[in-house]
Amino acid sequence: MTGLRILVVDDDPDLCRVACWTLEGMATCEVAHDLQSAARLLDASAFDLVLIDVTLRGESGLALLDQVRYRWPDTAATVISGSDDLDVAQEALARGALAYLVKPFRVNDLRIHVATVCATHRRMHASGACPPRAGIVAEIESMFASDTEVVCAVVEFRQLPLVGRAGTATSHELGDRLEQSARMLEGLDFVGVLGPASFVLAGPCELGATRADAPDLVRMAIDATARVPAGLGHLAPGFVVGVSVRSDDAETLLTEAEASARAALEHHVPALRFTSELEDAACDELELSSDLAAAIAGRDLRVAYQPQYLSGSLRVIGIEALARWHHATRGDVCPSVFVPIAERHGLIAPLGGHVLREACRAAANLTPDPARGPRISVNVSVAQLRDAAFTDTVLGALTEARLPAARLCLEVTESLVLEDTELLRAHFRRLSEYGIRWSLDDFGTGFSTFESLAEFPWSELKVDSTLTAQFERRSGREILRSIVAMAGRLDLDVVAEGVESTRQFEALRAIGFDAVQGYLMARPMPLERLREELAAPVARDLRTRFATAT
Image (cartoon, rainbow, N blue to C red):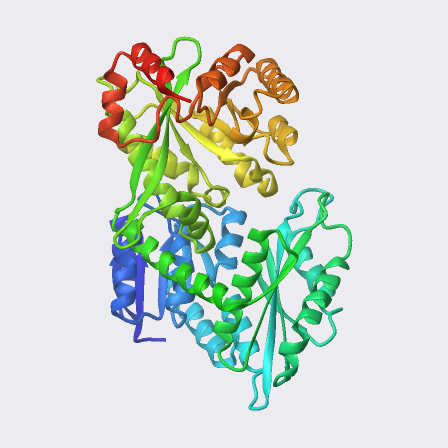
Protein backbone atom coordinates (compact mmCIF):
# COMPACT_ATOMS: atom_id res chain seq x y z
CA MET A 1 0.00 0.00 0.00
CA THR A 2 1.46 3.37 -1.06
CA GLY A 3 0.38 7.00 -1.35
CA LEU A 4 -0.88 7.20 2.24
CA ARG A 5 -0.95 10.40 4.27
CA ILE A 6 0.07 9.88 7.90
CA LEU A 7 0.05 12.32 10.81
CA VAL A 8 2.47 11.46 13.62
CA VAL A 9 1.48 13.12 16.94
CA ASP A 10 4.29 12.71 19.48
CA ASP A 11 6.29 15.14 21.60
CA ASP A 12 9.50 13.12 21.03
CA PRO A 13 11.23 14.61 17.94
CA ASP A 14 13.48 11.57 17.57
CA LEU A 15 10.55 9.17 17.42
CA CYS A 16 8.82 11.40 14.84
CA ARG A 17 11.93 11.43 12.66
CA VAL A 18 12.30 7.66 12.88
CA ALA A 19 8.62 7.10 12.06
CA CYS A 20 8.75 9.40 9.03
CA TRP A 21 11.95 7.76 7.79
CA THR A 22 10.49 4.28 8.32
CA LEU A 23 7.35 5.08 6.31
CA GLU A 24 9.21 6.81 3.48
CA GLY A 25 8.12 5.44 0.10
CA MET A 26 4.71 4.23 1.31
CA ALA A 27 3.40 7.38 2.99
CA THR A 28 3.75 11.14 3.19
CA CYS A 29 4.16 12.06 6.85
CA GLU A 30 3.48 15.24 8.79
CA VAL A 31 4.35 15.78 12.44
CA ALA A 32 2.67 17.48 15.41
CA HIS A 33 4.12 17.69 18.91
CA ASP A 34 0.92 18.70 20.76
CA LEU A 35 -2.86 18.34 20.51
CA GLN A 36 -3.47 21.85 19.21
CA SER A 37 -1.02 21.51 16.31
CA ALA A 38 -2.49 18.11 15.46
CA ALA A 39 -6.02 19.51 15.34
CA ARG A 40 -4.92 22.33 13.03
CA LEU A 41 -3.26 19.89 10.63
CA LEU A 42 -6.30 17.59 10.63
CA ASP A 43 -8.56 20.56 9.88
CA ALA A 44 -6.32 21.68 7.03
CA SER A 45 -5.77 18.37 5.23
CA ALA A 46 -7.09 14.81 4.91
CA PHE A 47 -5.08 11.98 6.46
CA ASP A 48 -5.44 8.22 6.14
CA LEU A 49 -4.01 7.54 9.60
CA VAL A 50 -3.00 9.43 12.72
CA LEU A 51 -0.47 7.88 15.11
CA ILE A 52 -1.11 9.36 18.56
CA ASP A 53 1.18 9.09 21.58
CA VAL A 54 -0.61 8.45 24.89
CA THR A 55 1.13 11.39 26.60
CA LEU A 56 1.85 14.71 24.93
CA ARG A 57 3.59 17.35 27.02
CA GLY A 58 1.43 16.66 30.02
CA GLU A 59 -1.77 16.15 27.99
CA SER A 60 -3.52 12.90 27.16
CA GLY A 61 -3.34 11.85 23.54
CA LEU A 62 -6.57 9.96 24.09
CA ALA A 63 -8.41 13.30 24.02
CA LEU A 64 -7.50 13.59 20.33
CA LEU A 65 -9.15 10.21 19.70
CA ASP A 66 -12.57 11.65 20.55
CA GLN A 67 -12.05 14.47 18.06
CA VAL A 68 -10.85 12.11 15.34
CA ARG A 69 -13.87 9.90 15.92
CA TYR A 70 -16.42 12.67 15.47
CA ARG A 71 -14.69 15.42 13.45
CA TRP A 72 -12.55 13.36 11.07
CA PRO A 73 -14.28 9.96 10.80
CA ASP A 74 -12.48 9.16 7.52
CA THR A 75 -9.17 9.09 9.40
CA ALA A 76 -8.02 5.91 11.15
CA ALA A 77 -6.23 6.21 14.49
CA THR A 78 -3.57 4.16 16.27
CA VAL A 79 -2.40 4.89 19.82
CA ILE A 80 1.32 4.42 20.51
CA SER A 81 2.75 4.06 23.99
CA GLY A 82 5.83 3.00 25.87
CA SER A 83 3.61 0.94 28.20
CA ASP A 84 1.79 -2.33 27.53
CA ASP A 85 -0.96 -1.35 29.99
CA LEU A 86 -4.07 -3.37 29.14
CA ASP A 87 -6.47 -0.86 30.74
CA VAL A 88 -5.13 1.98 28.60
CA ALA A 89 -5.23 -0.17 25.48
CA GLN A 90 -8.87 -1.07 26.17
CA GLU A 91 -9.79 2.57 26.74
CA ALA A 92 -8.04 3.62 23.52
CA LEU A 93 -9.92 0.98 21.53
CA ALA A 94 -13.22 1.93 23.20
CA ARG A 95 -12.66 5.56 22.22
CA GLY A 96 -12.18 4.75 18.54
CA ALA A 97 -8.57 3.65 18.02
CA LEU A 98 -8.14 0.71 15.67
CA ALA A 99 -4.94 -0.46 17.34
CA TYR A 100 -2.56 0.06 20.27
CA LEU A 101 1.13 -0.08 19.36
CA VAL A 102 3.80 -0.47 22.05
CA LYS A 103 7.18 1.27 21.67
CA PRO A 104 9.86 0.48 20.73
CA PHE A 105 8.80 -1.15 17.47
CA ARG A 106 10.87 -2.49 14.63
CA VAL A 107 10.99 -0.74 11.25
CA ASN A 108 9.15 -3.42 9.31
CA ASP A 109 6.59 -3.85 12.10
CA LEU A 110 5.54 -0.20 11.75
CA ARG A 111 5.21 -0.43 7.96
CA ILE A 112 3.09 -3.59 8.22
CA HIS A 113 1.00 -2.03 10.98
CA VAL A 114 0.26 1.12 8.96
CA ALA A 115 -0.72 -0.87 5.87
CA THR A 116 -2.95 -3.19 7.90
CA VAL A 117 -4.74 -0.47 9.84
CA CYS A 118 -5.38 1.69 6.78
CA ALA A 119 -6.73 -1.29 4.82
CA THR A 120 -8.94 -2.32 7.76
CA HIS A 121 -10.31 1.21 8.14
CA ARG A 122 -11.19 1.39 4.44
CA ARG A 123 -12.97 -1.98 4.60
CA MET A 124 -14.92 -0.89 7.67
CA HIS A 125 -16.18 2.24 5.93
CA ALA A 126 -16.95 0.34 2.74
CA SER A 127 -18.99 -2.23 4.70
CA GLY A 128 -20.62 0.32 6.97
CA ALA A 129 -18.80 -0.96 10.09
CA CYS A 130 -18.02 2.22 12.01
CA PRO A 131 -17.02 3.27 15.53
CA PRO A 132 -19.86 2.86 18.07
CA ARG A 133 -21.67 6.16 17.66
CA ALA A 134 -21.22 6.26 13.89
CA GLY A 135 -22.49 2.68 13.65
CA ILE A 136 -25.54 3.53 15.76
CA VAL A 137 -26.31 6.55 13.59
CA ALA A 138 -25.96 4.45 10.43
CA GLU A 139 -28.34 1.79 11.74
CA ILE A 140 -30.94 4.38 12.75
CA GLU A 141 -30.60 6.01 9.33
CA SER A 142 -31.51 2.72 7.68
CA MET A 143 -34.85 2.73 9.55
CA PHE A 144 -36.14 5.86 7.80
CA ALA A 145 -38.60 5.48 4.93
CA SER A 146 -40.95 7.85 3.13
CA ASP A 147 -43.98 6.89 5.20
CA THR A 148 -42.36 6.38 8.60
CA GLU A 149 -41.00 8.21 11.57
CA VAL A 150 -38.33 6.72 13.80
CA VAL A 151 -38.45 6.72 17.57
CA CYS A 152 -35.15 6.66 19.43
CA ALA A 153 -34.79 5.97 23.16
CA VAL A 154 -31.49 6.55 24.96
CA VAL A 155 -31.33 4.74 28.29
CA GLU A 156 -28.87 6.23 30.81
CA PHE A 157 -27.77 4.97 34.20
CA ARG A 158 -28.77 6.97 37.22
CA GLN A 159 -26.06 5.06 39.05
CA LEU A 160 -23.48 2.62 37.78
CA PRO A 161 -22.97 -0.83 39.23
CA LEU A 162 -19.43 -1.68 40.20
CA VAL A 163 -17.71 -3.53 37.37
CA GLY A 164 -14.35 -5.17 36.93
CA ARG A 165 -13.98 -6.57 40.45
CA ALA A 166 -14.04 -10.17 41.51
CA GLY A 167 -17.61 -11.39 41.65
CA THR A 168 -19.05 -8.49 39.64
CA ALA A 169 -19.85 -8.02 35.99
CA THR A 170 -17.27 -6.80 33.51
CA SER A 171 -18.24 -3.98 31.16
CA HIS A 172 -18.65 -6.51 28.33
CA GLU A 173 -21.00 -8.63 30.44
CA LEU A 174 -22.88 -5.49 31.37
CA GLY A 175 -23.39 -4.62 27.70
CA ASP A 176 -24.60 -8.15 26.94
CA ARG A 177 -27.13 -8.05 29.77
CA LEU A 178 -28.38 -4.62 28.79
CA GLU A 179 -28.94 -5.94 25.28
CA GLN A 180 -30.94 -8.86 26.70
CA SER A 181 -33.11 -6.41 28.60
CA ALA A 182 -33.54 -4.07 25.65
CA ARG A 183 -34.81 -6.89 23.46
CA MET A 184 -37.75 -7.25 25.84
CA LEU A 185 -39.06 -3.89 24.61
CA GLU A 186 -41.69 -4.64 22.00
CA GLY A 187 -41.44 -2.52 18.87
CA LEU A 188 -37.92 -1.15 19.46
CA ASP A 189 -34.65 -2.87 18.64
CA PHE A 190 -31.39 -2.73 20.53
CA VAL A 191 -29.09 -0.58 18.38
CA GLY A 192 -25.89 -0.35 20.41
CA VAL A 193 -24.03 0.76 23.53
CA LEU A 194 -23.10 4.45 23.43
CA GLY A 195 -20.77 4.26 26.38
CA PRO A 196 -20.31 2.69 29.79
CA ALA A 197 -23.47 4.44 31.05
CA SER A 198 -25.93 4.33 28.16
CA PHE A 199 -27.44 2.28 25.35
CA VAL A 200 -29.78 3.00 22.45
CA LEU A 201 -33.12 1.56 21.32
CA ALA A 202 -34.83 2.59 18.09
CA GLY A 203 -37.51 1.50 15.68
CA PRO A 204 -39.67 2.78 12.79
CA CYS A 205 -43.36 3.62 13.20
CA GLU A 206 -46.05 4.92 10.90
CA LEU A 207 -46.25 8.66 10.56
CA GLY A 208 -48.24 10.20 13.39
CA ALA A 209 -48.60 6.99 15.39
CA THR A 210 -45.35 7.37 17.28
CA ARG A 211 -46.06 10.83 18.60
CA ALA A 212 -49.36 9.73 20.09
CA ASP A 213 -47.82 6.58 21.54
CA ALA A 214 -44.65 8.20 22.88
CA PRO A 215 -45.74 8.13 26.56
CA ASP A 216 -46.46 4.40 26.22
CA LEU A 217 -43.07 3.87 24.60
CA VAL A 218 -41.40 5.67 27.49
CA ARG A 219 -43.22 3.47 30.00
CA MET A 220 -42.30 0.37 28.02
CA ALA A 221 -38.65 1.42 28.01
CA ILE A 222 -38.70 1.91 31.76
CA ASP A 223 -40.36 -1.48 32.25
CA ALA A 224 -37.69 -3.10 30.07
CA THR A 225 -34.81 -1.58 32.01
CA ALA A 226 -36.43 -2.76 35.24
CA ARG A 227 -36.02 -6.32 33.99
CA VAL A 228 -32.25 -6.11 33.57
CA PRO A 229 -30.83 -9.44 34.77
CA ALA A 230 -29.32 -9.54 38.23
CA GLY A 231 -25.62 -9.86 38.99
CA LEU A 232 -24.46 -6.48 37.70
CA GLY A 233 -22.47 -5.68 40.82
CA HIS A 234 -23.43 -4.90 44.38
CA LEU A 235 -25.31 -1.76 43.34
CA ALA A 236 -28.68 -2.10 41.67
CA PRO A 237 -28.57 0.03 38.51
CA GLY A 238 -31.21 2.72 38.07
CA PHE A 239 -32.16 4.22 34.72
CA VAL A 240 -33.71 7.18 32.98
CA VAL A 241 -34.95 7.22 29.41
CA GLY A 242 -34.79 10.00 26.84
CA VAL A 243 -37.05 9.72 23.80
CA SER A 244 -37.21 11.62 20.53
CA VAL A 245 -39.07 11.15 17.24
CA ARG A 246 -38.13 12.37 13.76
CA SER A 247 -38.82 11.56 10.13
CA ASP A 248 -35.29 12.43 9.01
CA ASP A 249 -31.64 12.89 10.15
CA ALA A 250 -30.44 10.05 12.39
CA GLU A 251 -27.62 12.09 13.95
CA THR A 252 -30.04 14.77 15.10
CA LEU A 253 -32.50 12.16 16.37
CA LEU A 254 -29.83 10.48 18.49
CA THR A 255 -28.57 13.82 19.82
CA GLU A 256 -32.12 14.80 20.80
CA ALA A 257 -32.68 11.52 22.65
CA GLU A 258 -29.36 11.96 24.46
CA ALA A 259 -30.34 15.49 25.51
CA SER A 260 -33.69 14.19 26.79
CA ALA A 261 -31.99 11.46 28.85
CA ARG A 262 -29.53 13.94 30.32
CA ALA A 263 -32.37 16.32 31.23
CA ALA A 264 -34.19 13.42 32.90
CA LEU A 265 -31.10 12.71 34.98
CA GLU A 266 -30.70 16.35 35.95
CA HIS A 267 -34.38 16.76 36.89
CA HIS A 268 -34.63 13.40 38.69
CA VAL A 269 -37.52 12.12 36.57
CA PRO A 270 -37.72 8.65 35.02
CA ALA A 271 -38.24 9.74 31.41
CA LEU A 272 -38.53 12.77 29.14
CA ARG A 273 -39.47 13.37 25.53
CA PHE A 274 -37.51 15.82 23.43
CA THR A 275 -39.03 19.31 23.39
CA SER A 276 -38.18 22.66 21.81
CA GLU A 277 -36.71 23.75 25.14
CA LEU A 278 -34.40 20.75 25.17
CA GLU A 279 -33.50 21.45 21.54
CA ASP A 280 -32.35 24.93 22.51
CA ALA A 281 -30.37 23.47 25.41
CA ALA A 282 -28.75 20.80 23.22
CA CYS A 283 -27.69 23.33 20.60
CA ASP A 284 -26.42 25.62 23.32
CA GLU A 285 -24.33 22.84 24.84
CA LEU A 286 -22.79 21.91 21.49
CA GLU A 287 -21.83 25.55 20.95
CA LEU A 288 -20.42 25.83 24.46
CA SER A 289 -18.41 22.63 24.10
CA SER A 290 -16.87 23.91 20.87
CA ASP A 291 -16.02 27.25 22.49
CA LEU A 292 -14.61 25.47 25.54
CA ALA A 293 -12.36 23.29 23.38
CA ALA A 294 -11.03 26.43 21.69
CA ALA A 295 -10.51 28.15 25.05
CA ILE A 296 -8.55 25.18 26.39
CA ALA A 297 -6.45 24.94 23.23
CA GLY A 298 -5.75 28.69 23.34
CA ARG A 299 -5.00 28.59 27.08
CA ASP A 300 -7.74 31.19 27.62
CA LEU A 301 -9.04 29.61 30.83
CA ARG A 302 -8.04 31.33 34.05
CA VAL A 303 -7.20 29.76 37.38
CA ALA A 304 -8.53 31.28 40.60
CA TYR A 305 -7.19 30.44 44.05
CA GLN A 306 -9.08 30.04 47.34
CA PRO A 307 -7.02 29.80 50.55
CA GLN A 308 -7.59 27.26 53.32
CA TYR A 309 -6.87 28.41 56.88
CA LEU A 310 -5.77 26.58 60.01
CA SER A 311 -8.70 26.99 62.38
CA GLY A 312 -6.47 27.66 65.39
CA SER A 313 -3.80 30.09 64.15
CA LEU A 314 -5.69 31.41 61.10
CA ARG A 315 -2.56 30.81 59.02
CA VAL A 316 -2.96 29.86 55.35
CA ILE A 317 -2.19 26.14 55.15
CA GLY A 318 -3.40 25.39 51.65
CA ILE A 319 -4.77 26.88 48.43
CA GLU A 320 -7.33 25.30 46.11
CA ALA A 321 -6.90 25.96 42.39
CA LEU A 322 -10.21 26.44 40.55
CA ALA A 323 -10.84 26.75 36.80
CA ARG A 324 -12.59 29.92 35.63
CA TRP A 325 -13.87 30.71 32.13
CA HIS A 326 -14.78 34.14 30.82
CA HIS A 327 -16.61 33.64 27.53
CA ALA A 328 -16.22 36.36 24.90
CA THR A 329 -19.97 36.91 24.52
CA ARG A 330 -21.57 35.09 27.48
CA GLY A 331 -19.34 36.54 30.17
CA ASP A 332 -18.34 34.37 33.11
CA VAL A 333 -19.51 30.76 32.69
CA CYS A 334 -20.08 28.96 35.97
CA PRO A 335 -17.84 25.90 36.62
CA SER A 336 -20.98 23.90 37.45
CA VAL A 337 -21.92 24.46 33.80
CA PHE A 338 -18.66 24.05 31.88
CA VAL A 339 -17.02 21.26 33.92
CA PRO A 340 -19.86 18.74 33.26
CA ILE A 341 -19.76 19.77 29.58
CA ALA A 342 -16.01 19.08 29.56
CA GLU A 343 -16.65 15.64 31.04
CA ARG A 344 -19.41 14.80 28.53
CA HIS A 345 -17.43 15.97 25.51
CA GLY A 346 -14.02 14.49 26.27
CA LEU A 347 -12.41 17.78 27.31
CA ILE A 348 -11.82 17.11 30.99
CA ALA A 349 -8.28 15.75 30.57
CA PRO A 350 -6.91 18.82 28.73
CA LEU A 351 -8.87 21.10 31.08
CA GLY A 352 -7.50 19.36 34.16
CA GLY A 353 -3.99 19.31 32.72
CA HIS A 354 -4.10 23.05 32.11
CA VAL A 355 -5.23 23.82 35.67
CA LEU A 356 -2.61 21.43 37.11
CA ARG A 357 0.29 23.07 35.27
CA GLU A 358 -0.87 26.60 36.07
CA ALA A 359 -1.40 25.75 39.73
CA CYS A 360 2.02 24.15 40.11
CA ARG A 361 3.73 27.15 38.51
CA ALA A 362 1.81 29.55 40.73
CA ALA A 363 2.61 27.62 43.91
CA ALA A 364 6.32 27.44 43.07
CA ASN A 365 6.49 31.21 42.68
CA LEU A 366 4.45 32.20 45.74
CA THR A 367 7.40 32.02 48.11
CA PRO A 368 11.15 32.65 47.71
CA ASP A 369 11.82 29.01 48.56
CA PRO A 370 9.61 26.60 46.52
CA ALA A 371 10.10 23.94 49.23
CA ARG A 372 8.31 26.12 51.78
CA GLY A 373 4.83 27.54 51.57
CA PRO A 374 1.19 26.49 51.54
CA ARG A 375 0.30 23.37 49.58
CA ILE A 376 -1.69 23.68 46.38
CA SER A 377 -4.82 21.55 45.86
CA VAL A 378 -6.01 20.60 42.37
CA ASN A 379 -9.27 18.83 41.55
CA VAL A 380 -8.88 15.63 39.54
CA SER A 381 -11.67 14.03 37.54
CA VAL A 382 -12.09 10.27 37.56
CA ALA A 383 -11.83 10.53 33.77
CA GLN A 384 -8.25 11.79 34.17
CA LEU A 385 -7.42 8.81 36.37
CA ARG A 386 -8.38 6.47 33.52
CA ASP A 387 -5.37 7.74 31.59
CA ALA A 388 -2.31 5.52 32.05
CA ALA A 389 -0.13 8.60 31.60
CA PHE A 390 -1.78 10.51 34.48
CA THR A 391 1.06 9.84 36.92
CA ASP A 392 3.62 11.04 34.37
CA THR A 393 1.45 14.09 33.66
CA VAL A 394 1.46 15.06 37.34
CA LEU A 395 5.17 14.44 37.80
CA GLY A 396 5.87 16.37 34.61
CA ALA A 397 3.92 19.38 35.89
CA LEU A 398 5.89 19.28 39.16
CA THR A 399 9.21 19.00 37.35
CA GLU A 400 8.38 21.80 34.94
CA ALA A 401 7.38 24.11 37.81
CA ARG A 402 10.19 22.88 40.12
CA LEU A 403 7.59 22.36 42.82
CA PRO A 404 8.29 19.75 45.52
CA ALA A 405 5.79 16.89 45.42
CA ALA A 406 4.90 17.39 49.10
CA ARG A 407 3.33 20.74 48.24
CA LEU A 408 0.77 19.22 45.86
CA CYS A 409 -2.59 17.80 46.95
CA LEU A 410 -4.91 16.06 44.48
CA GLU A 411 -8.63 16.22 45.29
CA VAL A 412 -10.89 13.40 44.10
CA THR A 413 -14.59 12.85 44.79
CA GLU A 414 -16.11 9.65 46.16
CA SER A 415 -17.32 8.62 42.70
CA LEU A 416 -13.87 7.12 42.11
CA VAL A 417 -14.99 3.95 43.90
CA LEU A 418 -17.05 3.15 40.81
CA GLU A 419 -13.82 3.22 38.81
CA ASP A 420 -11.79 1.07 41.18
CA THR A 421 -9.27 -0.48 38.79
CA GLU A 422 -5.67 -1.56 39.11
CA LEU A 423 -4.70 1.44 36.97
CA LEU A 424 -6.38 3.85 39.37
CA ARG A 425 -4.76 2.18 42.38
CA ALA A 426 -1.38 2.35 40.64
CA HIS A 427 -1.78 6.13 40.24
CA PHE A 428 -2.61 6.49 43.92
CA ARG A 429 0.27 4.27 44.96
CA ARG A 430 2.96 5.83 42.77
CA LEU A 431 2.04 9.44 43.45
CA SER A 432 1.76 8.79 47.20
CA GLU A 433 5.27 7.32 47.12
CA TYR A 434 6.53 10.64 45.72
CA GLY A 435 4.93 12.46 48.67
CA ILE A 436 1.87 13.86 46.89
CA ARG A 437 -1.22 14.12 49.11
CA TRP A 438 -4.67 12.78 48.22
CA SER A 439 -7.81 14.53 49.46
CA LEU A 440 -11.27 12.94 49.49
CA ASP A 441 -13.44 15.84 48.33
CA ASP A 442 -17.15 16.40 49.09
CA PHE A 443 -16.94 13.87 51.92
CA GLY A 444 -20.33 12.82 53.23
CA THR A 445 -22.30 13.28 50.00
CA GLY A 446 -21.69 9.86 48.40
CA PHE A 447 -22.70 6.30 49.12
CA SER A 448 -19.23 4.78 49.16
CA THR A 449 -17.49 6.84 51.81
CA PHE A 450 -16.29 4.18 54.22
CA GLU A 451 -15.24 1.70 51.55
CA SER A 452 -13.12 4.32 49.80
CA LEU A 453 -11.59 5.40 53.14
CA ALA A 454 -10.34 1.88 53.72
CA GLU A 455 -9.15 1.23 50.18
CA PHE A 456 -7.09 4.32 49.26
CA PRO A 457 -4.14 6.20 50.85
CA TRP A 458 -5.91 9.41 51.79
CA SER A 459 -4.17 12.28 53.58
CA GLU A 460 -7.20 14.52 54.03
CA LEU A 461 -10.99 14.63 54.17
CA LYS A 462 -12.84 17.70 52.87
CA VAL A 463 -16.30 17.73 54.46
CA ASP A 464 -18.93 18.99 52.06
CA SER A 465 -20.67 22.30 52.72
CA THR A 466 -24.06 20.58 52.94
CA LEU A 467 -22.81 18.89 56.12
CA THR A 468 -20.90 21.81 57.63
CA ALA A 469 -24.06 23.92 57.21
CA GLN A 470 -25.77 21.60 59.74
CA PHE A 471 -23.66 22.91 62.66
CA GLU A 472 -26.66 24.50 64.41
CA ARG A 473 -28.62 21.25 64.62
CA ARG A 474 -27.74 18.81 67.36
CA SER A 475 -27.77 15.85 64.97
CA GLY A 476 -25.59 17.79 62.53
CA ARG A 477 -23.01 18.60 65.22
CA GLU A 478 -22.88 14.96 66.31
CA ILE A 479 -22.26 13.81 62.74
CA LEU A 480 -19.49 16.37 62.34
CA ARG A 481 -17.90 15.31 65.66
CA SER A 482 -18.00 11.68 64.50
CA ILE A 483 -16.26 12.57 61.24
CA VAL A 484 -13.54 14.51 63.06
CA ALA A 485 -13.02 11.68 65.55
CA MET A 486 -12.84 9.08 62.79
CA ALA A 487 -10.37 11.22 60.82
CA GLY A 488 -8.21 11.53 63.92
CA ARG A 489 -8.10 7.77 64.44
CA LEU A 490 -7.13 7.31 60.77
CA ASP A 491 -4.49 10.06 61.02
CA LEU A 492 -6.23 12.21 58.39
CA ASP A 493 -6.46 15.98 58.28
CA VAL A 494 -10.01 17.25 58.04
CA VAL A 495 -11.11 20.44 56.25
CA ALA A 496 -14.52 22.11 56.54
CA GLU A 497 -15.82 23.57 53.28
CA GLY A 498 -18.42 26.29 52.81
CA VAL A 499 -17.69 28.34 55.94
CA GLU A 500 -19.73 31.52 55.57
CA SER A 501 -20.34 32.99 59.06
CA THR A 502 -18.45 33.63 62.27
CA ARG A 503 -20.87 31.40 64.24
CA GLN A 504 -20.24 28.55 61.82
CA PHE A 505 -16.48 29.07 62.02
CA GLU A 506 -16.44 29.08 65.82
CA ALA A 507 -18.66 25.98 66.00
CA LEU A 508 -16.51 24.03 63.54
CA ARG A 509 -13.32 25.05 65.33
CA ALA A 510 -14.83 23.90 68.65
CA ILE A 511 -15.82 20.56 67.06
CA GLY A 512 -12.18 20.05 66.09
CA PHE A 513 -11.74 20.83 62.39
CA ASP A 514 -8.07 21.31 61.48
CA ALA A 515 -8.72 23.73 58.64
CA VAL A 516 -11.54 25.78 57.13
CA GLN A 517 -12.32 27.11 53.68
CA GLY A 518 -15.13 29.40 52.58
CA TYR A 519 -16.36 32.86 51.69
CA LEU A 520 -16.02 34.07 55.28
CA MET A 521 -12.24 33.99 54.98
CA ALA A 522 -11.73 34.48 51.26
CA ARG A 523 -13.43 33.99 47.93
CA PRO A 524 -11.55 32.51 44.95
CA MET A 525 -9.15 35.18 43.71
CA PRO A 526 -6.60 35.81 40.95
CA LEU A 527 -2.94 35.05 41.61
CA GLU A 528 -1.99 38.71 42.13
CA ARG A 529 -4.62 39.09 44.87
CA LEU A 530 -3.47 35.83 46.45
CA ARG A 531 0.06 37.21 46.80
CA GLU A 532 -1.36 40.21 48.66
CA GLU A 533 -3.43 37.89 50.85
CA LEU A 534 -0.39 35.88 51.87
CA ALA A 535 1.66 39.01 52.57
CA ALA A 536 -1.06 40.66 54.71
CA PRO A 537 -1.18 40.39 58.52
CA VAL A 538 -3.55 37.45 58.38
CA ALA A 539 -5.06 37.40 61.89
CA ARG A 540 -5.97 41.08 61.90
CA ASP A 541 -7.41 40.87 58.39
CA LEU A 542 -9.55 37.88 59.34
CA ARG A 543 -10.88 39.61 62.45
CA THR A 544 -12.01 42.44 60.17
CA ARG A 545 -13.84 39.95 57.98
CA PHE A 546 -15.44 38.27 60.96
CA ALA A 547 -16.75 41.57 62.24
CA THR A 548 -18.59 42.25 58.98
CA ALA A 549 -19.67 38.72 58.05
CA THR A 550 -23.21 37.51 58.59
